[in-house]
Length: 304
Image (cartoon, rainbow, N blue to C red; front, side, top):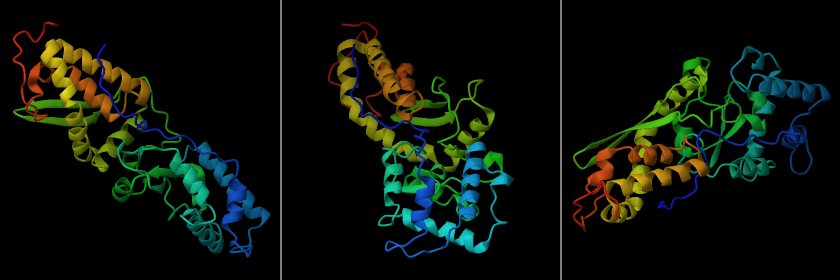
């Protein structure tokens, strides 16, 4: 069976949950200078308070909740907690934590295409200082998404997916695309499909997220590059096996993407959608992919 070659990509919407067994050690390290001088005298009571907040964070799945607010704690303690994040930066004493978090994502889980070079505080450090270096609150993100994305808000309709806690179905195709072929132009519009398999709160987050991060406009150039690379293979199959051959080729490729990257990666939505697009499969790809017709197809539905 024909199948297009493709690059294995990190699954969108999902990031591996970090290891949190060293949080106390990380906290103590962040509160001292390299030569051992204390930045802040962290008491056993302070450590217990932090651990209780961490436990509550996990209990509430990292979502905004009154019990996670820490404004009632001592100002000096909160300032010290906020400043610990400096040690997570490159060259800091917890740079290894940063490295391990970024290593877990080949591509930005928010958009599926960007290079995750930085970390996002899911609960903003400006309000939730106590989670400044809590691994479960630090999510890999690319610079573009980080610049666009504002901190998750208290309004449930303006929150982003928490990739460590929100359970997204891996057997339900919720990230879909509408494809139109108008003249020599292919137009793609991604959207979130709702269904019983998708929690309603998560559905709202996904809808807000793809709009806020401008994924439709940002993914356009990646789709163009991706399809241009696949164009010659599609043409070869069409000119030897016609429309049915292209349908089989794209279906097989979509199945391989599904196996490696899941059914909610943007490449799966594009290839699967095109496999069902009659006009595209029946030679409509020539102009959009800037291909010259080499063979005249007289019976496109008949395999040779």
